[in-house]
Length: 275
Image 1 (cartoon, one colour):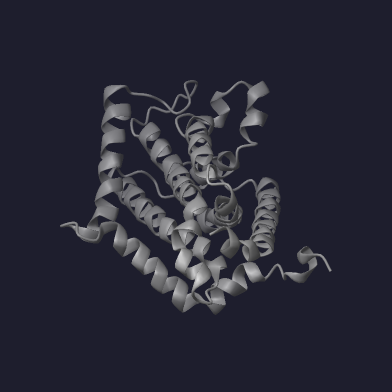
Image 2 (image 1 turned 60 degrees about the horizontal axis):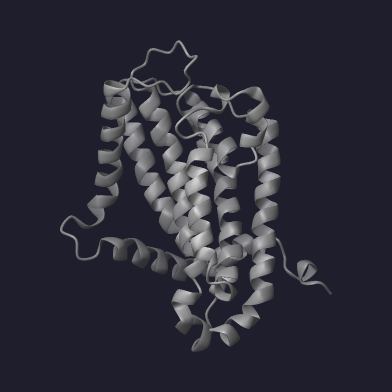
């Protein structure tokens, strides 16, 4: 029987539930380890996005007075900084997960060779750690909206529905890269180049509407584009989600997560031999 039929799609979430104490412990260690030895410790997770938001606001909104859409008549001087920061939250989450995934198994050889360990949870640990930092950035963004008296739209309640498939898609790609990284060590360098390209090929410094219509469809082949645009719509502009587009994205995200898990389970038997 093909492996695809042997693995229950629910295993994407069952593994998280079964090993939740271990995943939580490893995630806490991952987050704390990043700031271990620093004077301010975990406060850096709030200070860093706060400083970056302040810099973006000053440089782009006050000095250059840039607009997210050159054709817009919106005179909100904070509009570009808010759009830029909200886009970078998603990019930084995606970039952190994918850049670290190729080294997850290679960097934890003891888990492969010496003990019985659920290796499939390692991408979950990375995703949860990156999600923690994304949440702190969202808190900073919401506080900034409050300070500048930007309207809070009720459509904000849709944000978790938009973020969830993006997390699943990232998790699936992380399973792929964690496995491939064992057999092809150069994959980490290649992913670094791809992520750099995605920074400028995603609607972070501009909106999709600002592009010529002939190029706009190609931009949506980027997995970041749709989610960034939808998050801005519900968070900053008070617009509802694109439900048909979101349904398609959910289908793609679930398929990617399942395929990533299947690939990981299929190749994990060869990890010990290579390492």
